[in-house]
Image 1 (cartoon, rainbow, N blue to C red):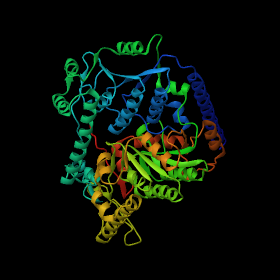
Image 2: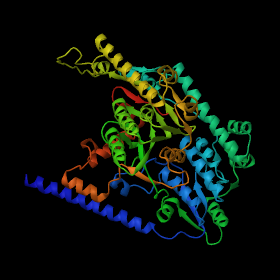
Image 3: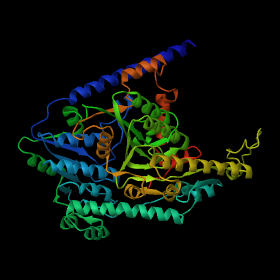
Image 4: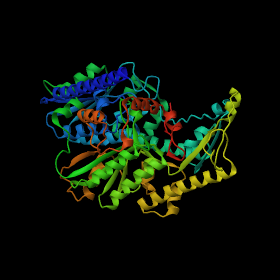
Amino acid sequence: MRRFIIGFFTVIGALVTLLVVLSAVAGLVGMLGRGSVASNTVLTLDLTSALPEAPVTDPIASALGPETPTLRDVLDALERGGDDPRVKGLFVRLGDEGIGTAQAQELHDALAQFRAKGKFAIAYADTFGEFNTGTHAYYLASAFDQIWLQPLGTLGLTGLMAATPFIRGTLDKLAIEPSFDHRSEYKTAMNEITERHMTAPHREEAEALVQSVYGQIVRGIAEGRHLSETGVRALIDRGPLLTQEALDAHLVDRVGYRDQAEDEAKERAGSDAKLISLVRYLGRAGHPHRSGPTIALIYGTGLILRGGSSDGLLASANTMGADTLRRAFDDASRDKAVRAILFRIDSPGGSAIASETIWQAVNRVHERGTPVIVSMGNVAGSGGYYVAAPADKIVAEPATLTGSIGVFAGKFVTTGLWDKLGITWDTVDAGTNADMFSSLQDFSPAEHERFEAFLDATYEGFKDRVARGRHLDLAKVEEVAKGRVWTGEEAKARGLVDELGGFNTALALAKEAAKIPAAQDVTLKLFPRPETASELIVRLLSGSDGDRDQADTQGTLSAALEELRLALRQAQYATLPPGSLAMPPLWGP
């Protein structure tokens, strides 16, 4: 016992020391980041990987993780830099497929405003896809006034492909029988488990989505490069293009290396020009929207699950915890300074129960009279649309994937696998349907009746929430439901979305709903407030969660394991509870 006690306090001491050091390092980094901005400044940014939507709220992960700007950071820097006479332009590295189409559209609009204020924007890529597609990356590059490509680089402008993996064949080899059902025919997440190929509705949906996004990409490139849409389609059909071919087709302006492109940016900025990272510039110049009436900002990113949200070093590990979101909306509505709430969603959905919890929190705030404006990111489908339904206004980019109003559920029957392995089971039970959720046998007729009733009730409840929030009759909702995914462009035409645009469009609508003059600045206040390292130390040592729900508390080790588990896409879907409001990703390898 003595060794245990000594070991326990040794671990606690080490943890406290680590947190103190991390807190000190974070403070030192913040101090070093402060300083003056040169009179001829060029902002720099690497966009070869995805931009996270929400800031990391875990102080440990924040201190250990790389200095990665969020999408909001980039938008803030372009807004601040556009009005800053010291900032002359922007130099961005592109080339890989990290940025989703909807994010690219949001950045495209911000770049247009930045350039409209007399700033230049140079995009550099060593290659747009190395023996791989570079379509999304080049689409974003077309928003810049000058595009550089490294010699021997290629322009992988090859179009779009949606690929869906089907594991039914694997399950058959393992003698595992999937016993699933859905509401309704376009709810394709189930198909990855139960089918070997796309069903007719699945293919219809996928083709419509690909064609919609493809058309948007073609229009964007044509506008940015002053080409005809017909010409752009012909160039895509020729792709991938070699360096000289891209130059001859006026898709690239200059061929050269990164240092040469940087020298060009300095020359355009003027004598003694300095390059400074976008993150460091924000640290020195400050974020916009720090004064004026208050608008709450709440992020909902990742799979929707019961309990608390998680974030950390792996962006794909983010989860939208129902308890965390419920508390955030309650706190924002009780804050007398808050005039409206901006709810930013980037989620493929998840648990139906968790979605209902968040829906009720959003609806309660709406009924209390606080306006709620939703801004959708790359994806806001299924449960991600469910939680948006009560909002006063919904804003999506044209390429946002949304809708997917439907549900799927079921279980894997593993009897055949156990037979192959020579493993036998004996069970005892009490209750007619006690083994309903067991994987040892399929549903009995009575259990199947209850299972179908559950699907019907969840689907009808989902449609009811949409009908009430969007002021549509149920027959109209059924027309756009059936589990079908729409692009934002298609969703607006069908009454599921109010406006096309990004964060700034949603912010303007929030100001309008709060009766704040359009020209007046506002304070964006994040809910829940990020926890500081010192607060984390006090909470861990005291064993108290303060005003946090017990479900919000996660041990450091268990949280890290959860992040690794959730980083695997298929594992994410496998861990969803029965009755899930989730949609699979569209773009495959």
